[in-house]
Length: 106
Image 1 (cartoon, rainbow, N blue to C red):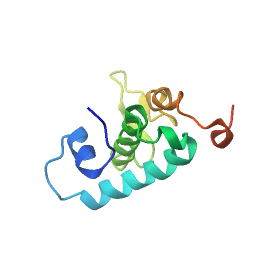
Image 2 (image 1 turned 45 degrees about the vertical axis):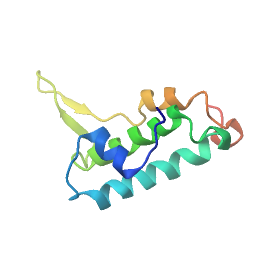
Image 3 (image 1 turned 180 degrees about the horizontal axis):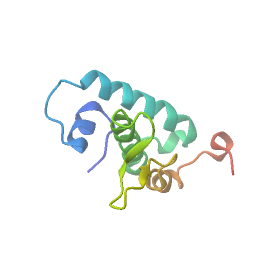
Image 4 (image 1 turned 90 degrees about the vertical axis):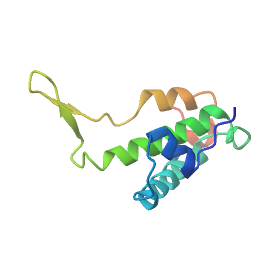
């Protein structure tokens, strides 16, 4: 089954059934696509891994609205749990599809 990073799939991925946040979700999806697309090989854009990475990035942006200061919550010992800058799962999905001429090598 092919994964497609569109609004309906993002809503399903997040378990959202209402239309209340559709404009926010679409903006997050557009931003995720603008971030990922230039970094991957054009021939790989429709690969399931790439499309799932876009969905995950959009979901991450959507969830980020609830943590404007980068705080995801608090651990049981009272320490702050921060949101990491890069999601390693998204990177792993993209790593075989990167256009190294565009993405750069660290």
